[in-house]
Image (cartoon, rainbow, N blue to C red; front, side, top):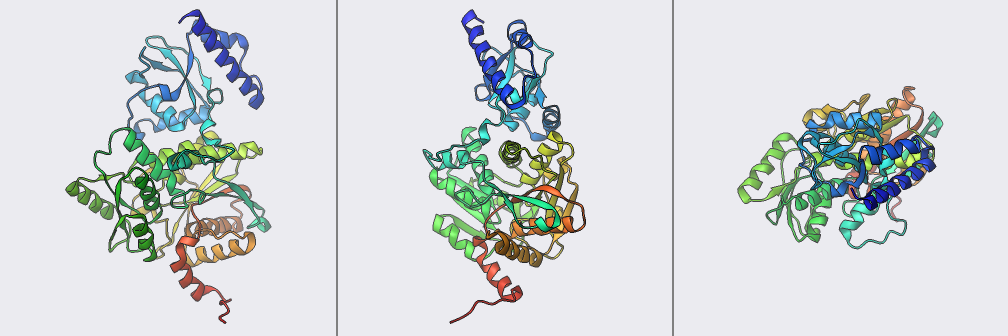
Length: 442
């Protein structure tokens, strides 16, 4: 490296060190910094500049857990062309899944027996968002209009629980958490050259489909959505208005239903992103949803006692579990599923098939009936004024049961996947059946 290059590297390292001082105080001596830069030829480069092969999540999930529990990484070994050597692909993929802005690197065959704190790598840069909220296009909007809000509810305060609701309907296409999944699957498929046809097929219970159709329209792609029998009829009209083709299936979403979509796509030459098997479903929640929660609560000096979320594909709850169980070992994670014989939009039972749940630890999975989820939607609407979706109602009902059983106290994050306005048919039925106060008809 030239003298000028060494000087620039040193200046960048010192800037990061000062930033770390503001956040945590000096945890590294200046002499150690100089040793890293000059003796070991350590460089900090943007992760986006590094190239490497993407591998399956199962091959590096243990590395992910290690990075989060240590909160540090050894340097990546790269070639002169900025490609990761094969022996470091697991580490590269794990860092890519966590998404720091910078990574420490050394040029192979050099190696350094040193650990670099993730805090030195501008770890949270991708979840800070834009203060003015002006975006160049809708794809930019989905990526950068974050973090979604976290708000403290009055609900359950009488039981000694501070409910911090993560409001995931602050997304433009589906008004739900599933915009994250649709965006990340599609943008990566396009960037990696997987979309070789203009046709996309996807099984969806509503929200991922809405997110995918919205983004596909921007990219001039055509989408066929496969809806299970459990979805409201009015959802068909939303997809039709957006220009999507709708296929109704006569069963709930199961492995067999998803496989039938794959068969159709193979016959028709269409691409299936497959939210149920695509590891990007998990990774987007690790890189964004979980990091946002951590970043937001750290900003007010809080580490949650527990986090609770619904189980649909299992993507967001599994990712949050992996992140917080390893970053903070004492955080409890709870999953929520429909009770046997009950159907709640957006969540389903584990035995219907979930890919990522087996890789993580949940402290408990709580069963909830549709009627209890609905009653909680009403309670929250009348206590806090928010009309949350039915899966959010299930999450908060499960949280109430845990609080009533003295399992949970203190600060708890509840992930609320979407808003209640999309469920008008179900709400109409349940209001008529369950609400003692009927609307006044003039």
